[in-house]
Image (tube, rainbow, N blue to C red; front, top):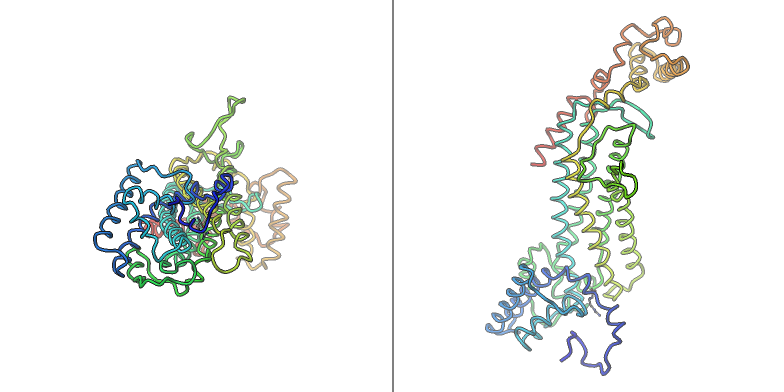
Length: 458
Ligand code: ARG
């Protein structure tokens, strides 16, 4: 018989170029462990509805177990020119158990098989990504803890804005990653469905115990509609968009680090293990991995749009277009997993130049907002206070005299309600201590948030 799962009605051989293009084995071989898991569950279900005898069940199960074993120890060789992973597994089983392998495909289609194995892959990797993301957060929180006392100029529009604790900045990274984790948690629901028994589109004529199959696969529910199952890839769209979500955050953190390590800024020092040199300029220690990570959002967004475009306008049931889904999902999953692992390493080894942090705080315009707020305290409206503080900054710029060195009488000419205590404002520690709200950069608040994260990430 042919090494295809079909072929009875065909008299001619396929064009080899067509066959190569048509094959998805180069991608979907990653589904192998999931395919095997499903096969074992399916064999037991076929036995329960008497399609297989006890002897046949035993034979098939031990062949599947042997296949699993050789897959795990790396000795498994599959037929490279297989149409897809499901065909490759069946070919191998046939080598071991003969024509009995043909019975395995009773009551199922590759349409439900591919949908189920992809769901299992996604669920597994979603869980793995949640773990990796938590490890990244842990590394970030460790640095937040270590550097919470380091104050630096916080920026908006890449311009100095107000003083921030570095711990506060790192806490922001943990917050954003938490949002991606929550969207991923929610996305898992669409993956967590047993679709076996759906067949090609209409359901199957054998009484497969779908609830039990779901249980054996560790899934919490059975599908309500076999026709929906055959073409449903919404779980992939959802997953790809979560991965793109991670991607945007990683790209922004990468950008922050790049700015922090710029010569002239020189606040962040990346470990050599994460830098590269130049083939021509011997002095270079480039943080170009961060650029690679920033650029990876092109991969994540591209894969998401690719999947959406593939799905758009497709007739509801299975169409071969769907085979492209593997290309998108494996690429995004692997990129995301690797980036999270590397960023964990980057944060674990990251060093902060505290001396530079102090030097960067020399810009007293960082305290202009504190100055305006203090004027509000003496009864001036915020609009007037903002205006007066702005005039003071401008005077300092025009004269080249630091604000803290301008005499009180001159300051009073601009801001009549200003008092001698104003000179206390030009101090970074004082500035962060002035902040009173939850989630602010006040040292007590930063400490509290670090403690909360440490408890929740345990
Ligand atoms: N390899 C295919 C995929 O990944 C499954 C094959 C189903 N083929 C078919 N003609 N129904 O989507």
